Structures are given as C-alpha cells and as structure tokens.
Length: 389
Picture 1: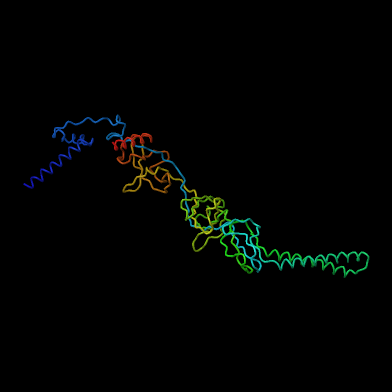
Picture 2: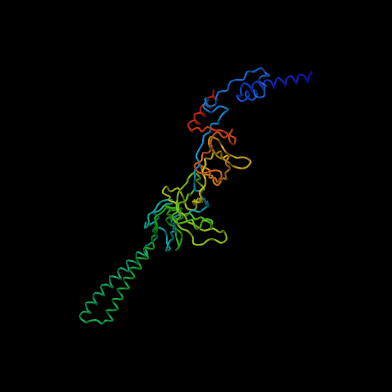
C-alpha cells in the first residue's frame, strides 16, 4: 500500500511538472509535438508567432544582440615605482656666532621671505667695537689729509706719507671687520620657505653652528625613484608621469621627469630618476612616499569592449558577426584598460563587429539580429517593468 502511494505521488508530481512546462515554456510545445506526446495527451499545439513580429526579443528565430566595432590601440608599457619625496630646497639655518638670543621673529609653521631677520643675538660688544673703529678711521683720515697738504709743500718725506695712508687703510678695514662682526649677531633667512618646528626661545644661549630653524621651499616636490634598465632608452627629461601619494590614495597628480642619473646600479639593474610635482595647494610634504607611474607606447593591438570577451575551456574568445551569423574567434588578452581590452587574434581584424550583449544563448553559426544600444536599453527597461508587475 505504501509503495502504491509513493508511485501515485510521483506520477502526480511529474504530471504537474509537465503541465507547468507545457503551459509556461514556449519552446516545450513544439518539442513535445515533434515526438507525438501532445497527441497522446490530447493537447492542441499553440500557434507560435514569428519572432520578427515580436521585436526579435522572444524565443526562437534569430537572436537579437548588441554589437560593437573592433578598434586598434597602442599597448602601453607601464612602469610603476615607489619614490621618496623631498622639498625643492631645504636649508638648515645655523648660528655663526656664540651669544644669547635677544629677539626671535619667527614661529613654527610660518612662511618667511629670503633676507628676513629671524633672530638677533646680544650685540653690545660688537656695537662698541664698531664705534671705536669708526673713531679711529676718522682720526686716520684727518692725519692723512694733513700730511698730504704738507707733502705738497715738501715738508714731509715720502715715507711719512706712506705710513699715514697705510694707517688710514687699516682703519677702514677695521671698520669693515667691526661691521661684519655686528652683522653676525643677527640671523637671516637664506631662502623663502616654511619654517619647521623650532626648539629655541628668547634668552637661550647658542653656540656657533647650533641649529636655529629648518626652512623648506616646498613649492615643488622632488621625487627620487628607480626604473628598470629596459626603459633606459625610452625615458627622457620632461616626460610626464602620474603620481599618487601613498597616504592620499584618492589624489592623482601629474608631474614630469626632472633629472636622470647617468649610471645603472649593477646590483638592482635599475637607474635613479628624479621627478618634479607642483605643489600649489601645499598638500604635499617632504619625506612622503609616492607611487610613480610612467607609460611608454609600444606595439598596437586589437581593441574590443570588455563585455565582448567570453571564456571557454579553450580560453578567451569573442563572438564575431559575419553575414548575419556569429562565429567564435579565439583571442589572446594583451592588456586590460578601463574602457577596453587589448587582444591579439588571427581570426579577427580591425573594423569587424563583435557581440557585447546577448551572448548567453549564442552558438557557433547561429543567426543573429543586430540591435542598437537604444533598443537594448528599451528592452531592459521593459523586462524590469514586467518583473516589477
């Protein structure tokens, strides 16, 4: 009894499945009609409308596909390297004298112009020495003028005249020395740039060569990086490059090659290159790490839309449309771009048409009808609307 019940339930499930298949799958009735099952079940086959009358999107007949043309594009040889950034100029400002700081006119993070006095040292002794040298110079000038007047009348010897002139010259040099010593009591900015963090205050004593401040001109950032020796003959000064700071992945900057080293490193087989990136917005800092990308034009290859590339057990291929039918054309992927895939193929040529949409049901030699992109969009919208209902 239990076995009979299981058989009955199985037959009921099969009958229900067959009913659903016949009622909702348009291709089921023609197949069942060919094998004579519809006559056995007493079902009259439904008339199938011509696919062309249904806009080409229904089952049966030629498959409607969206196509694109095969183009040609140069294969880009890309080189990517990690480089270290440094400022265009960076100067460590140091004291040339020993003394106590009496005036400090700079702050950390501020911008200074070249020639600006940023610090002063105690200079009382140097000021006094300058005044004394000026007095001695004035006395020497007075003596020299008096001796010259006497020399015109023959009242002094040439030796005496020579002595006073040497004394005047020595006094002038003493004034210059005193002025120089006084000038060393103030520290000026050698370049225009940004001041880093400072560790001195008014009242601190500094010795000669003590660091006062670090001034950096970061209007441009120089990036040192290395490239493989295979591109030595391709790279040149002024060549554009793409730069991405590793700490700011969303920022993509454009720079250029500024300098190229003259030798290849034997250990790494790479060559040192220096790039230059403008920093008008002051977003970059010296010491940052950068990803540098260079592109070199190479051989040309076929260019197809990314959706056109399909895969099988034999590898990648595209569906080429020829005389209203599709043919499988094997390809070799060379490079992927944002908007295209560069391929090589002996069965494909520039200007041919390949399928980019509607590839799911294609078979080699199948008939196809080419639709425009607008038709494809309209069809997709109609399908979405029907699914929503």
